[in-house]
Every structure is written in C-alpha cells, then in structure tokens.
Length: 212
Image (cartoon, rainbow, N blue to C red; front, side):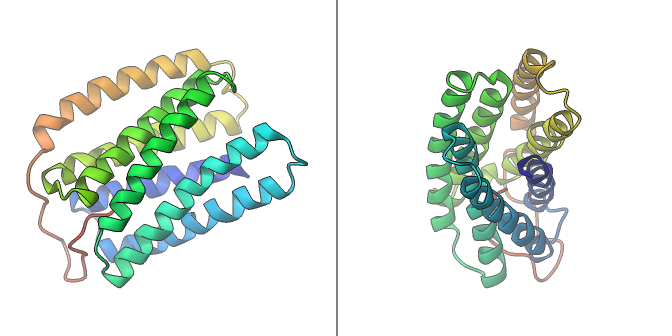
C-alpha cells in the first residue's frame, strides 16, 4: 500500500513542479494534491494500526505524514489563496525531519538508496522553505525543475523497482545513480533557471508558488 503511495508522490511532485515552471494552471493542480495528500494520511494510519507494534513499520509509516500534510496544505493554499509563509516554514520542519529519516535509513534500516532519496527530499523541501518562507522567488523556477525531476527519480522509478521486487538487488547501484543525477542535473539547472517566476498561464493561477 505504501509503495502505491510512493508512485503517486512521484506524480504530484511532477505536476507541482510543472506548476512552478508555469506549464500547469495552479488551481488545476489542487485536486491531485488533495487525492495524494489524503492517501498519504490514510495509508500510514492504516499501517500503524496494523503494525502490531513493529517499530520499523511505525518508523517507515511516520514519514508518510510529512508528504500527506504537505500536499493537503498545498491544496488548501491554492484553493483558498492563502499566504504561503506558513507552508514555507512547515517545509523547513519537513526538511529537517527528512535529514533524520535519511540517517535512519543509512544506519538502522540499512537502505542506502532510500537514505539518498530522503536527502534529496530534504533538499527539495529546503528549497520550498526558501521560496515560500523567505520569499526567494528567484528560486521558484529552479525549485519547480527539481520537483519535477525528483517526482520521477525519487518516486516513480523507486516505486516500480519496489513493486517489481527488484529494489534490494539494485540498492547500491540506485544510490550511486541518484547521487550522480542529483549533482549533475541540479547543478546544471541552477544557472539556467534562477530568476523571476514565469507569468501564469491562466487567470485562476495562484500568485504564491506551492511545493510538492
């Protein structure tokens, strides 16, 4: 169930990234944020209630709430036209927690690839904090590109590897590939995409950018 959720985390990151880049109307992205946000709240709740007290299951499930609350917060902001600073500072909280989950995956859980993935999520949510919490709008397009790429690299591809039972065999290879992709792609994109936000593509676009 959690693996299916990961697949749709990839979808919402991709759509929200395109929204920040100006290719998707902001309000049209809200329904997917509601659907995936609700999934990422219901799923960990079910996993915890059926875990029989297994600490590793509870640990893994607890991280899903960070995504669920983020996407619901995004949807609320888009539909109600709220100021983005609250979401921005919540993103800082998520980024810090993601660093902790990364350390736990490297150590306690022994999943190197997901340790790297959590660090990538920490980087992305830190960008959301800079854009929304601190008003660094010049980073909006770069943040959108990072979100769109991470949707595939940290969501869709790992989900399919896990669903097909091939994750363990490629754990180290995946980790190395993720590091290379992150450093090369994100480093190359920064000088090209830093600058003002693109003009909205529709009259109902929100003026405040929103994260994955």
